[in-house]
Amino acid sequence: MSSREITYAEAIREALREEMARDERVFLIGESINYGLFGVTAGLREEFGSERVRNAPISEAAIVGAALGAAITGMRPVAEIMFADFLFCAMDSIVNQVAKWRYMIAGQANVPLVIRAPQGSGFGMGCHHSQSPEWVFAHFPGLKVVAPSTPYDAKGLLKASIRDDNPVIFFEHKMLYRMRGPVPEGEYLIPLGRADVKREGSDATIVATSLMVHRALEAAAELAGEGISVEVIDPRTLSPLDRGAILGSVRKTGRLIIAEEACRTGGFGAEVAAIAAEEAIDALDAPIRRVAAFDVPIPSGGLEEAIIPKAEDIANAVRAAIEAKGRRGIGPAPDARSHPPSDYPWPT
Image (cartoon, rainbow, N blue to C red):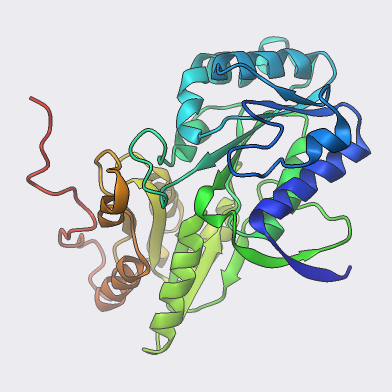
């Protein structure tokens, strides 16, 4: 397969176009789906018509409900929620219907439904348009959760998601839409549930998701100049999670750092840390480190940079893990990245 460089957004649009051309049951539904807020679906309505690229009312519950009905009656809908934050407006439909339908009827019908949702900070849009709620949905059995970090992964995983007979929540980071990367021109799929080693290393493992993959790679490059070899694992799908890839890397390096953009408490990092503690604690030479956003609402404008992890935060966590060698069982000292500011004005 020949390759070329395209953007993350173009890779997603290409996956949608190819799957719509391949299977007439695939259709799109969402608010302003004829173009999309970030231009991802531009041109598809002109190519496939308004019956297959359907504008919906401003009601996330209606969008998900209609998509579920279509899925269980033979179609393969791809529903777009304009911001991942708005998934909560359809929480009952997603958690109590979409996730459970196939189980409730003993597998007599499939639920081939993909829900696409732009997530994450970086545009200064404030607390209602900048969250990273992917791990919330990974908690619920029956849902598959995907969070690609590169154009190559975005295309291959979206095509695989559309062909899956189970519901998939497909998270796309807004800051990645313009990122360019190699994407083959030929047909390819990436199986859900298979992690990718973005960089091999021997001294520490960083498990990172979505945008944090790139900040982890930046940190790894900086640390390489200090003689520290870091392995970067991108799970790509949070559910199902490739536990084997994570545990294999931890057993090789002896140190684990998890980097995520979501808030620290009860997040993806906590689950990965628990898996490592339960199944590979004898391989750990240092306490597990989590690098995540502060447990505060995301502020507007440039203030969001103060709470979202940077490459330097990840690099410092690796350095701390390296320095902790031989002190197994001793927890890390509190630091600014691990805890919210003590003077945060909690409501009274």
